[in-house]
Image 1: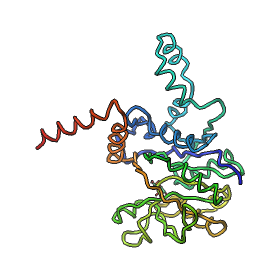
Image 2 (image 1 turned 60 degrees about the vertical axis):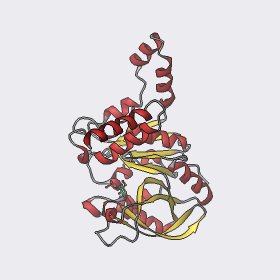
Image 3 (image 1 turned 180 degrees about the horizontal axis):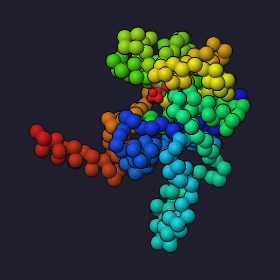
Length: 292
Ligand code: G1P
């Protein structure tokens, strides 16, 4: 079975749910505690064994490319000042030369179109897809669990989680079939179902492992929900040609593309830090008391 070596990060989105913060700063560069959102997603991919990181960017997103480059003046200054800890932290996150690729989605035509833009960079091998709005917190990373399931089953895997049934119209929703190893067969899938029509409350949480045949299907895919080329619609067709499995992720997911998920993520990741945990608790206690 071919190893999943490459990951695609569609980072061309305009961030309209998060204005004015995202007017000049890409939403992927907003910080959760002290790391940009995109760094969490790249770290998750690396922890799952990914070796090459493909970014589908857009206009005004060049700062993402800069973030993953060496900042010579900064590194040099830190070295001269003996700031070993900061330097080591930056270096530990630094992709090696040749590990990153960047291409642009020139027009906003939906997630399916963004993924299709990466077809030549991915080539003829399976790949991971990580939606950068979604960052996760758990003992074992979501993509790592998926890579393990892939090692048992091969083919295509989509991660899902339960959502509030009142929220299903915001997501891709799957219906669960028979269990397979640590996953399950997907019996149906629909992108942003109209309220009251969802086949379940299992929503696609932004992590996928896909075979390269998805690109041919995306090339022919017509526009769907929101008048955009939807990945979910193409995956439904892929599932008719090859096995397509669901992976039920049990950890936390934060949707950092909107203020509520972003605030939750900041609290959750700060609570995990020994130096910040008490800051969160004390601040919440103090301000709650003041309000009451
Ligand atoms: C995309 C996918 C959807 C998925 C969601 C997760 O939608 O199309 O299936 O549930 O991401 O965030 P978008 O949020 O881009 O509208």
